[in-house]
Image (cartoon, rainbow, N blue to C red; front, side):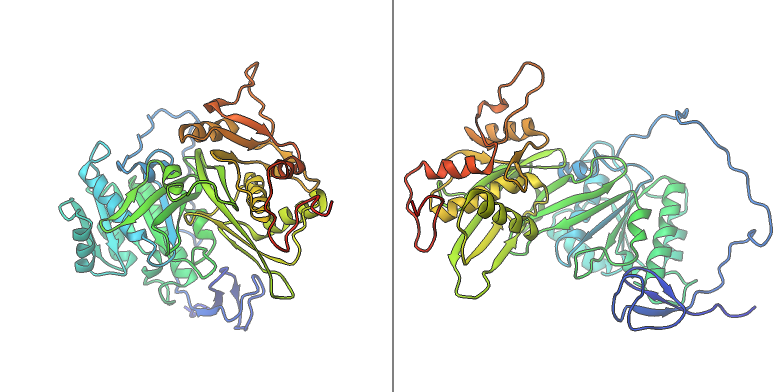
Length: 476
C-alpha cells in the first residue's frame, strides 16, 4: 500500500496545502503551515461494503429527559444554562494563569461531593501537570478529601480505553485538549489534525456513554481558542474565562450554548483559597465608587439574563501630540469614535485636540450598544468638570443623528438599579406593557430623546469649565 501523501496544514485556520508556503492562502497567516502525514486509518466497511440502516424516530420521543447535573456552584451552573447536561461536551478557554484549572477542579470536587444535590462520579485527566501538582492545588483549595479520580495521560487511546466501560464517570475533565494525541497521526500534539481528531474521539465516546466531557483549550495571542475553528462547532457549549491580571474579578462567559442562553456570565473573585463565586456582582463592581466624581457614570447593562451595574470612567486631558490619543479599556474603540463624532457634529461639544481615556471599572468588557449614553454622559461630565447627578444610572443607544434609541430589557435594568439604592435614570422614554407606564424600581426616569437633552442637563448646572475645554454656548 502506498504511503499517505504528506500535506501542509495551517495551524490557524486548518486549511490544507499540497506544498509549503510562507503565507496561508485561506486566512492570510504567515509561517503557519506545518507538515502533517496522516496514516491510513480508513474505517473498515467503507471499501465497497454496505452501511447499517438508521432507525429514525419522532421529535417527541418516549424517554424522559435526563435532569441536569448541578454542581452547587451557582455561577458555573448559571453559565451552563442551569447545570451540566448529560452527554454534552463543553469547551473552556482562557489566558494562561487566568484560573481555568482552578475553577474546574472546584467544580469537580463540588459534583463529586454532592454539593448541588446528587453525587456524580468525576474524573480529572491532566496532560500538563503531574498528579502531585494537581494534589497540591487541591490541598490549597481545601478540597483534597473530595472523591475525584485523577489521572495524568496524553494518549487518547489510553483515555478512551479507561472511559469506555460500564463504570464510566459522569463528568470528565480533559486538561488540556492541546496536549492530547492520537497515535494514528504523525503530527505533533497541539496541531490542527491532532486537536480535531482527539476532540472528535472524546465527544463521540461521551455521546455514546452518556457522560459529560469538559475540554480545556489554550488561546492564541488574539484571545481565541487555539486550534481549528471547527472545534467550537463540534462541542455543545463554549465558555471563555476572562479577567484582567490587575483585578481580582474573573468572568466566565458563555459564547455558545445549545442548552441555554448565550452571553450569560458568571462572576468569580480570586482569593487565597481559590475562586469564590460572587452572587451580587453589581454591588461588588460599585463598591469602590466614591460619591460624585466628574467623568464617571454608572451604566445599567445586561449580560445574558442578568442585569449588571458597572461604572464607566472618562478622562479628558490636553494633548501634547499632533494626533490626540484615544485609549479604551473594556469597550469598543470604534464606538467611542462614533460617540465623539456625534457629540461634536450634532451637539456642538468641542472636543478639540484633547486626549480621551475611557475605562470600564472592575475589568469587565462591555459589548452591547446600550452603553453609548453612559459613555457620552461620562465624556460630557469630564469635559465640563460637572459630575453626573448622584444615584443616577444611565443607558441607551445613540444613533448617528444624535437620537437616543430604546434598548431591550429596560425593566430588568431599572429594577436592579432600584435594589441597589439608585433613585433616578437617564434613559430613553420608557415603554411599559399595557396601561402601566410607571418605571419599575421606584426610579425617577429623566427621559433623553436626543443627545442634546443630555448635554443641556449639564449646561443648566453651574459650570466650572476647565482650561482649553469648552461646552456648547461657552463662546456666547
